[in-house]
Each structure stands twice: as C-alpha cells, then as structure tokens.
Length: 416
Image 1 (cartoon, rainbow, N blue to C red):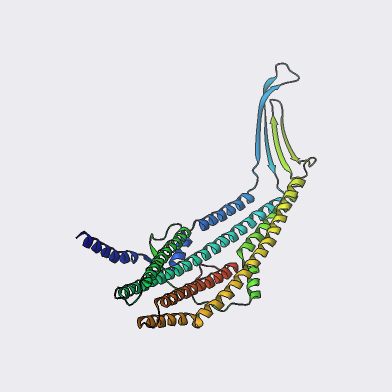
Image 2: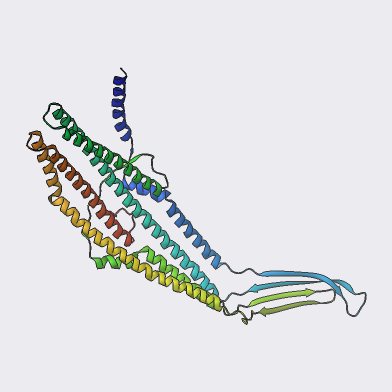
C-alpha cells in the first residue's frame, strides 16, 4: 500500500512540475530592453554624472562676489588732550576677472558636459548590447534545454524498449547497462541546461536592476542577419561614431581648455577697492586698484600639470583607437567564421544527422543493427544540433559586437 501511494505521489509530481514551469511570464526583447532602460543602475549613474557636469557649468559661469570690510576703533586728537572719540572705516573690493580667464574656465566646463553626454551614450550602448546578447544567450540556452529534454525523453523510451528486449532474451544485458548509463548522462545534461537557463535569467535581472519578474521565459528567435559590409566601411563608422572615442576627444578638449585657463591666470587680475574712513574731525573717501605681483609663483607648476593631463588624454585617445580597431578586426573575423559555419550546418549537415538517426533506429527495430549504433547516431545528432545552436548564437553575438563598436543605439526600433 505504501509503495502504491509513493508511486501515485511521484506521478502527481510529474504532472505538477510542467504546470509550474509553464507559469513563467513570457518576456520579449522589447519588454526586457524597456525595463533595462528604466531601471539599469549604470545608466542612472551616467545620467547623474551628466547632471553634475551641468552644475559645474553654472559654477564656472558664476562671477566673484565683492568683499566688504568694516573697522572700528578709538580716535585721539593730536592737538587736544581732551579730543577723543570713535573712528571707523568701511571698505569694498571687487575682483575683476579677465575675459580670457572666465572664457577658458567656462569652455572647460562645457567640454565636461560634452564628455558626460558621450560617456552616457557609451554606457547606454554597452548596457544595451549586453542586454541584447544576454537575451540571445537565454534564447540559446532555452533551446539547449529543449533539446536536452527531447534527448532525455527519447533515450528513456529507448531504455524501455531495451528492457523489454533484454527481458525476452532478444538482446544482451550489456545493451541495458549501456542504455541506463546514456539515460543518466542525458538527465545530467538536462539538469545542467536548466541551471544555465537560470544563470542567463540572473544576468538579465541584474541588468534590469531586479525589475523583471521572478520567473520569465524569453520569447522570440534570433533575427536573420544581413550580409557583412566591407571592413573599411565599418572601420570608418567606428572612427566617426564610437562614443568611447567621442568621450575621450571631449575630455582632451577639456584638458586643453584647462591649460588655457592656467595660462590666462598668469596675467594679474585687478581688484578695485573703494574705502571710506571717518573720525570726529575728518572724512576720507579713497578709490584704488590692486594687482598681485607674480614674483615667486608664476604658475609654471599648474601649467605643466594641466599640459601633462592634456598629453595623457591624447595618449588615451590613441590607445583607445588602437584597441577598438583590434576589437573590430576580431569581431569581423568571428562573424565571418560563424557565418560560414552556420551555412555548413544549414546546407545539409543537420538533415544528414537526423536521417542517419532514423535509419539506425529503423535498422535496430528490425534487428539489422546493434543498439550501440543507435546511441552513436543519437549522440551525433545531439552534438550537431548543439553546435548549430551555438554557431547561430556566436554569429549573432559577433554581429552585436560590430553594432556596438559602430555606436548604434541598441534601444532603437530599427536595430536587429
């Protein structure tokens, strides 16, 4: 009785598990990108840096405040011993900024806004294409999981037939042992595929700031890709539109503006002073101009530091350009290789592997071939399907790398 109850409970569990798995929320690529656009923390930080840069423009445009000074004291007459009272002095001073100082400081802050804008575009492109690749990876892993489940179901059915043949003496027991081991391997592969699916979902959740549903299933398929354009065309688009290079160029312009600012500060800036002094006998009103004397500090160190930062920014531009061109070479070569591999699979390799399995199964059922040949054919078909699925994903990932390097908006409707 207990054994029958356990069998009934196990059967009910098998019926409930697919229902629970089907309760996952369907998620399209557009929905995932929309959630990432709203909730991604890296993009939110980039927007805050842009707000900080805009505030720095306001700081750079602010004019220096005037200074007021008040002095009070006792007054003693020099002609009369009894002549005493109070004396006071009121002073007002205003620093007059030279136009070159103010213009260079404002220009540096404005270049900072441009750099922040391009950095925000850079983060947007990186996060968007990371999301597209992660979504495609989830589609691939879901397909791998489906293939692993089909393989497990097929091997389980074969195991049942092998048991029947071994029971009636039509097949040796070695075939049963081999079939049981193959089912065990297939079950392990199916569990591993499910684990990889959860890992891919976790990456999408992180990119979306945990705003996606707890359980979701990617809906869609990898898009058809156009023919690869000429490498020289992609190279020129990269040099013209890549947001990383634009951000570094804006940073270089900001460093150059800081050099101009430090050089402009070498010219003494005047301070206009207005002073009024009063005592019981006299009142004086004085107007004067003060200049700092550049005797000890002529800002050689500040100018050299600003120039070194500008030189460093220029070096970073050259290094980044070389790095991006290397990435473009690798992505273009990978896309070309994956395109040829996909064409090889689609030109007949998949059909041949599937036909070989059907022939081996039919021959085994009629006793013309052994069970080991069926397993070999099944293993070959599984390997071909898995490699084809991987090649399609790698081709799509390489194409996404090319789109990323060109700085195309990953959230645009016209994107693949």
